[in-house]
Image (cartoon, rainbow, N blue to C red):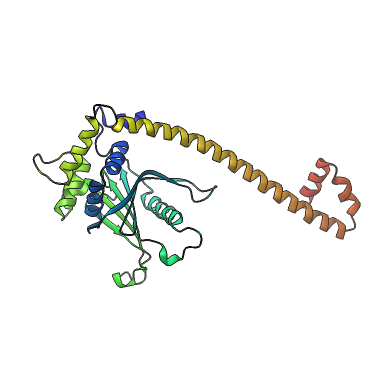
Length: 287
């Protein structure tokens, strides 16, 4: 976690993962406005915010840790601050959405109750090169790529390139992306970016250290806890693989017994049953 705190010199800004998560969690009104600015439409209320949410669809799956997860108007929204270049951004977004769906749709719930989901990537640079700053991806019919032929499965991936902020038509989104890219706010303006910067400063100026540093310490503990969980998971996977291997071996021995008996070699099998080396030879001979 120390590396996260120091990645922006002495004063971590809004794009710092710890600061970003804490500002969003502690300020639902700002979180709501950031999401509205990114999506381009208003929300009535943010009903739930969770930061660093970990989802593991099943024991052997890669786990996912989402920056900020919010629920609003029946929609699931994941907000990611992507500072470093991510070459697999599209597939990462795909996996994030699938993990959110798995987490949302519990056993016994009908598919039509699966909520709309949005994955928003604020990229500090320009992941798709210079030019367009706004990208909104939905599932389309490749043969008939029109709005009427969208699959309408409720999934949307939004990728915003802060490095291309000058290309954005929406003044509010342009200012937000500029702030993310440069860290600069127009002095004296009472817009979203100035309020975000004020929230960041409040974290720095918190006299009793209950701001981002305490959160960073909590995050460090979470990192250690996650490491222990990963070790436990690795052991569980090893045991599972061992069990599967035993099951597979048992099935192979069954098949071997049937084959040898049918060949009139039942006594040979019985002798090998008490001799692991002999059994292994018979199994290998049958491969």
